[in-house]
Length: 108
Image 1 (cartoon, rainbow, N blue to C red):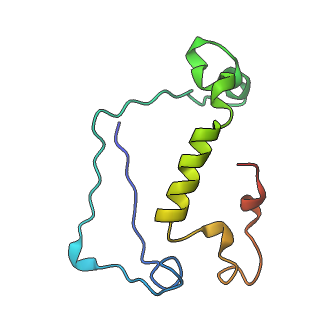
Image 2 (cartoon, rainbow, N blue to C red):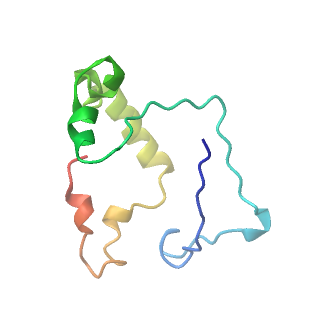
Image 3 (cartoon, rainbow, N blue to C red):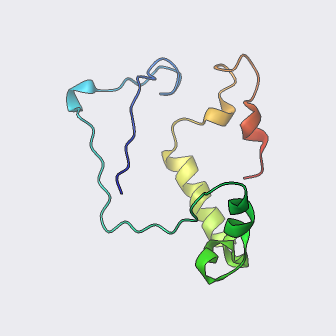
């Protein structure tokens, strides 16, 4: 499997409202995954909804312990967000003329 992504210049809005600029002299930007393993449910059409949602050994990710984060996991996530996150799409009201994008209202 190969995964591709793209980088776009969002200096004017994503990087602390334009205060931080991308240093393009460091390009090309390359990311590698070491020992990456995935476990997926193959989408083959509408039947995949029930197949991928079934609780069975193949769909281990549907087990109750994976439905929500534990208190220590929430604390870890909160720490990372407070100390390392520099941009939050869902709180960028300036970009969206005072509104919040509709997808940001979905349950996290």
